[in-house]
Amino acid sequence: MNPLSDRVINMSTSQTLAMAAKARELRIEGKDIIGLSLGEPDFETPDFIKNSAKQAINDNYNSYSPVDGYADLKLAISAKFKRDNNLDYGPAQIVVSTGAKQSLFNIAMVVLNPGDEVILPCPYWVSYSDMIKLAEGVPVEVQTSIDTDFKMTAEQLEGAITSKTKMIWFSSPCNPSGSVYSKHELEELATVLDKYPHIYVVSDEIYEHINFEERHFSMAQIPSMYDRTITVNGVSKAFAMTGWRIGFIGAPEKIARACNKMQGQVTSGANSIAQRAVVTAMEADPSSIQYMVTEFEKRRNLILSLANNIPGMICNIPAGAFYIFPDISYYFGKSLRGKTINSADDFAMYLLEEALVATVTGEAFGNKDCIRISYAASQEQIIEAMSRIRKALQE
Image (cartoon, rainbow, N blue to C red; front, side, top):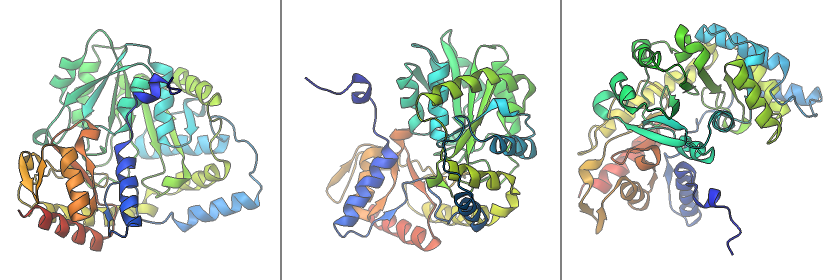
C-alpha cells in the first residue's frame, strides 16, 4: 500500500528547484555548469540590513514572534505601502510570513473552495498552479504571447470569466517574462472586473523595485479594486534576502485575519531575527538598493543583445525582474548533436547537457514555446553562457 497521499503524488515538482538540483549533480561530477535557472540575486544582502540582524541577536530576540509579525514591522510595512504605492494598509491588514511563497499559499487556502476557478495569465510563476490545486481550486490558464508582451488583455480576461471564477493571480513585474503591467493596462482589466464584484485579485509584486522603466503601479491603487486586491510582496528579490525568508501581504482585513488564523496552525510567526532586519529594510529609501537595479538593467541589455544574435531565439524586452523568456519553438522538430528537440523541456535539457548552462523550461510557467533564462549572474557569466548556447545551437 502506498503511504503517500494523492495530494502529494499529484503535485508537480518545482521545475526551477529541480533544474538547480540537476545542475548541482553535474557540478559534483566535475562539469562546469553556469546556473541561470534560479531567481536569486547574486548580490550580498546590504550591510546596513545585516548589521540590524546582528543587533537583534545581541538584543536577544530569541522568543516566538507574533503569528502575523512584530507590531513595529507591520507599521514599517504599512509606511512602505504608503510611500511606494500610495496604499493605505493598516497593521490589521498586514500579515508577515515565511517568504512570499507562504503568503501566496495562505491566500489560496483561506479563499478557495473546491471547484473555485482561478484565472492565471500565462506565463505565471511556477508554484501558482499547484498551490491553487492544493486548495482544491481549478487553475484556468489564459495564454498570452510575445506579441502582447506576455500580458493578458481585457478581452482575454472577459472571455475567461465564468460563474465559477473566484480569483485572478498575476505578477508584475512578471516572473518569468519580466513584463510589467502599466497603469492603463491594469485599469482596463479593472473595468472588466467592475462587472464581477465577487472576483478577488492576487497581485504579486515581489519584483516591484526591479523595474527599468515607468514607476510601479499596484492594482490596489485603483479605487474599485482596493477592497478586492491582495497585494503580495517581500524582501527576497529587491534586497537580495532570499534566504531570510520574509514575505508579507496587504489585504482586506477579513482575508488578513484568515491568513493569520491559517498561519497560526502551520508555521506560526516568521523568524524573529529576520523580521528585525526587515524593519530596517522597510524603513530604507528605495534609492539605497538602486545600485542593484542599475546593474540588472545593464545585464538585461547585455543578455538581450547576445540572445538576439542567436538564430531562432525571439525575445521581448522585459521591463522588470531579472529574466528573459525567449521563444525557442523554431528548434522544435530539429535534431542537434543527435538529439531531437520536441519541446521546451527537451530544449532546456539539451542546453544543460550540451552547453552546460542551466535554464528552466517554459512549460513550468504555462508556456510550451519558451524557456526562462535568469540574468542574476555576473556579466562575465552571462557572456560565457550565451556563447556556449550559441555554439550548442549552431548545427
